[in-house]
Image (cartoon, rainbow, N blue to C red; front, side):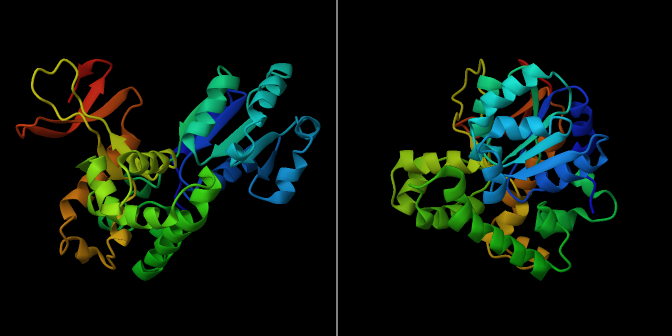
Length: 328
């Protein structure tokens, strides 16, 4: 099992804050990590998965149930399913101000952030968990394997490339056909999403052009922009903003868009082996997507990333900014 660097970080947060929120894509390892940490806590933990009807039913009278277990760290998985919990957790925390009372796991960032900002401000530390990064694989594995398979734990640690590909195929199918409706409700076209993902994979690291995608998929620009926002909220894609503060030249201001996991890029492009990357037209964009995600995960939290490109062709793939100061 690969040790995640967030392990010690979250342990530290639980000693300081009444609640900790751990956000990230589905299947990225949030539940595994939370349970590992829970087992190590002196007071023990209680785990609730709100995707399970039996666990969700336990919270019909959430105040009474949670108070019965106020001596434990309570882990609530997929907490966005029951958003009314946020205001109750605020009241419970204020009644008993104690570090490490709750761990909240979620797969949709806006819903969680909205609940935190409205109800739990000053009571919670929020952090994001990405896929396995290059620092976590250490010297045991090669960057080539990491780049090709990506960082979803089950895909990266699969016995063979074929097993890894099968897992990624299942993840893609499940996300499009089941998870999107679960996370965002109805009104999302599965057929549009099925066409959108491969287009994103083949154009990862390019400047966003809503009209081009909309034309290719037969939908409106606002519709496809909304779909992109949903994938960003689910931690599937990353938007890298353009750096244009105080610029006098004509700067491209649309963001670059990346599929965050390189394994997803390669499966959506139907690659079966590492060498296939170099036989394709997307080797450069795949590598850029991979590098940007590793840098984003490993950079200092005070540094923001941008790209810079003028309409005249001057370009810098990554700009490191600390406050208003460009540092690299």
